[in-house]
Length: 156
Image 1 (cartoon, helix red, strand yellow):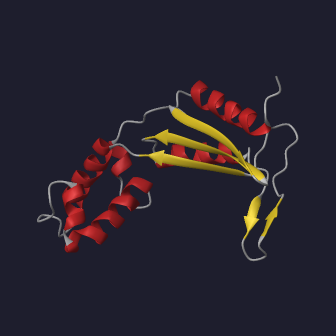
Image 2 (tube, one colour):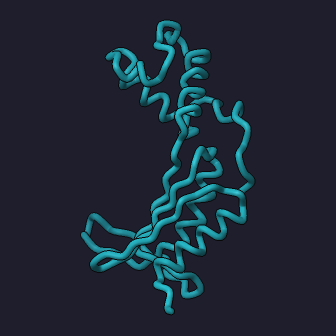
């Protein structure tokens, strides 16, 4: 039985992530004029995400150029099974969202009247947009030092 290129790429990614102790869901698919691999990891630190994305992007053979409306083959590597698109998503657990919200309430000014739950903040106009934007920035690692308080999950 012959393995498709997209299945081989997914298998190679899954194997490497598993070898490094990273829990992931890796799915491949094919469609008219292309194929893809979707990778979902869980509760990864921002630095680990950068490394995971850099590794997975090796399996994508190009990129879409929206200015010219074409797909450009810019990353060909004959030694790897490659696909047209690779996406990597970091699924954050509810517990980690809440821990980041609690950390924000302690660190940021004017958060003493913030709701106890980050979900409740969505319902309040004052904290809804601001709170979720700040929460995303904290979890993304672009703001604050929340991740220095969180125990790393895996080595990358």
